[in-house]
Amino acid sequence: MTGCARNPTPRVLPPRPASTEAPSDSAIVRTAMKYLGTPYVLGGTSPSTGFDCSGFVWYVFKQHGIAVPRGVVNQASAGRHVERASIRAGDLVFFSTTGPGFTHVGIATSRDSFIHAPNSHGVVRIEPLGSSYWSQRYAGARRLTQ
Image (cartoon, rainbow, N blue to C red; front, side, top):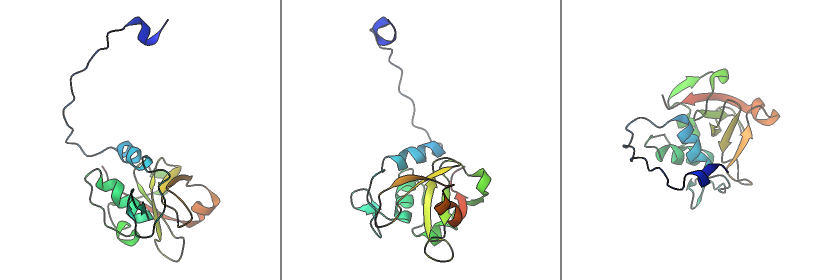
């Protein structure tokens, strides 16, 4: 036998002090993943009513005490520029979908995928950055965390 059966008395660890450090990139992604399946709603900024793309980003980062502007164009000037090859989980990824310039945003879950609120026919979901649709429309990335 293995596992719990060998030691019926659980070991209790002391509580960890609250961290004063900035949230990790993976913490941002874990928070974003909680909202998979939330419907797209134009202008939406909460899981109870739904999200649009920038409202989703705004809400997720707000949960970690990071102030992010509302709106794709404003978010595209936040943080610092990241080269495509250096994208990591928690970075913002931008696309040009409905016209010139930045028109869509998501949160990278890795260098190869991102989570976003896609459009009025969708729900918050993860998609590959390298898909033919998204790679043709990729417009840049920004990093808001350390």
